[in-house]
Amino acid sequence: MDKRRENFSNVFTFASIIVGVLVFFGIVFPDAFGEISKEISIWISSTFGWYYMALFTVILFFCVFLAISPIGKLKLGKPNDRPEFKTVSWLAMLFSAGMGIGLVFYGASEPISHFLAPPTADPETKEALAESMRSTILHYGFHPWAVYGIVALVLAYSQFRKGEVGLISKTLRPILGNKVDGPIGTAVDVLTVFVTIIGVAVSLGIGAMQINGGLNYLFGIPYSQFVQGIIIAVVTILFIYSAWSGLSKGIQYLSNLNMIMAGLLFVAMLILGPTLLILNMMTTATGDYLNTLIFHSLDVAPLNEQKSDWMHAWTIYYWGWWMSWSPFVGIFIARISRGRSIREFVLAVLVVPTVVSILWFSAFGMTGVETGLKAPQIFELTPETQLFGIFNELPFSLILSIFTLILIASFFITSADSATFVLGMQTSFGNLKPANFIKIIWGLALSAIAYILLLSGGETGLNALQSAAIISALPFSIVVIMMMIAFYKDANRERKYLGLYIKPDRQRMEEYMKRVNESEDRGN
Image (cartoon, rainbow, N blue to C red; front, top):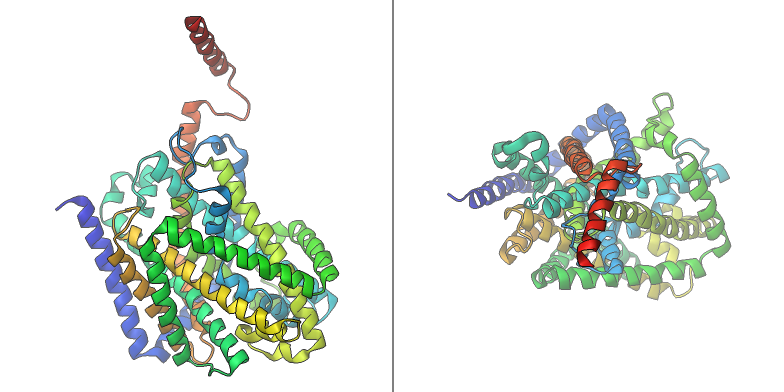
């Protein structure tokens, strides 16, 4: 049997079996499924919280090192390769895939939550407000994008510069050799598929909850798992249709649309909200975030029970969620980043989304807190309805709410659309144009897992979603460490071969200039 066909068969078959068992167990025993996943996630959070914090910090500083080192001059592709997408479309696609629904769901609710229950300060104080903004920016700032970036960078380097197929397993060839073509490689790819499904399903579940919450708040439509199932079914049809149209059409157009709509919503919040407070807190919170970045990147609060509990509910959950999203977002970003230098790639992936996140959470967070102080009932609302309660206190409330529902649905479609492409690629030996029937299969699987997680989470569904993210992230984090080691080993070897140094090699420069002069002499 052809090796490519064999790999496709193994990865697709094993991943399908695992997902099928998960769906079956979740449908037949939803309560047990939720309870087991909750217990496992609590154990992981309490046992490996320090590991997540340390690993994310190491990944961030490794990205910074690559950006300033001579390795940054290497291109993600052949020397003559040019970027496939315009920079604006490229940034829109990577941001839509990387954050999307989370920005809308947590835009106001997370700063409000931290204001009411801060890590260390007394609730509903000025100190709590400062902590709420700093903590939110930490969760959506450099750290998640460093993880996304390193997975994408290593894969793009392996695929476009070294000629490997677009599979996570192939990035490990510098340290595992030909073992990546056997069972070990298959196991890595199956794990990648599984983690991708869980990570995206968490996002889709959150999106369904917020759409349902908005419809309930605005039109009195019941907030229930049945309605959320209908929402998932409708959006599934839409994103499968989008996936059918192909990457360059469906995903690109939707991503650009998402960024335009999100930009309009941000401007509305900036104007309708407490504008001066937003701008002041945005500036102060950014300084606070940068000033305390190293400390809060590594602090696991072993001697502070209040902060420790808060971190398990928030930071550790986020680090698990971002890690579980990293194969999906990383593979997708790699696919659209051919032709860019490592330095350009790292700086864009780290800086641009972080700046956008700071702007977004400053506008929505400050508007949410200020509105809640004037209308305290907003603080009593669930996270999925809180944003609509805030809109209700602002001018043009109905327009803002409907516009937001459309944006959530669009982010929902884009994330799932991108995920079906990634899953199709991973289960068809890295094919950059996976067959439509494969994308449809994985689209249905994504929706099924999202609904199973909502069913197993009881009334809120959010606990099961958080548990799934934390559990799936742990094994894949080992793969990410191996990817970094393999990439540095290979890229540093190439850097030496090309004579790329911080301080130019005098002998190599003299040889280069000699060749240039000889070429000019021959031309004359």
